[in-house]
Structures are given as C-alpha cells and as structure tokens.
Length: 85
Image 1: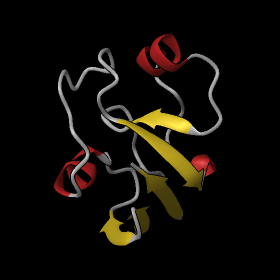
Image 2: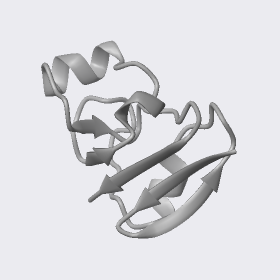
Image 3: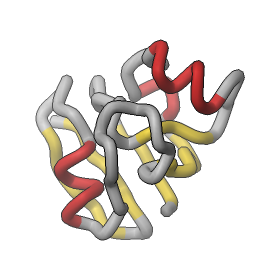
C-alpha cells in the first residue's frame, strides 16, 4: 500500500494506482487530463523515486524537472510521496 501526502493530508493508494483521483478530491484542479494544459502541476516535496517515470507529455510540458509533475500523468509505484499544490 502506497501513501500520498498532499498539503499535509495523508491518502492511502494501491501500489501502481494513478494519483489523479486522490489529487482531484484534495482540490487540485484538472482541465484537459491529457498532460497538455498544465493545470494540474504539483510540487513533489519528497518521494519522486516512488512515482512512475515521466511521460512524454510531461517532458514536453515541464522539460527537465526534479520537483514538478503533472498529477494527471502520474502513478504512485509504492512508498510515500509528499506533494504540495
């Protein structure tokens, strides 16, 4: 079982689960949901290694990043990921 911490709220997720639903429930806005618009950019405070690899859409939109992800494109692999929106 993985854990997502978003703005200090802890949310349990299955390993390999997309984080979009949990982020949306926590108030992160979404628009296109395809990694194009950037509405759902979140800051990864810790646990980047516990997220899925960057998608092509994320690389196109964010470029080389070490602290931001698009919530619509991520899955949590395992462990704990701490995000800030």
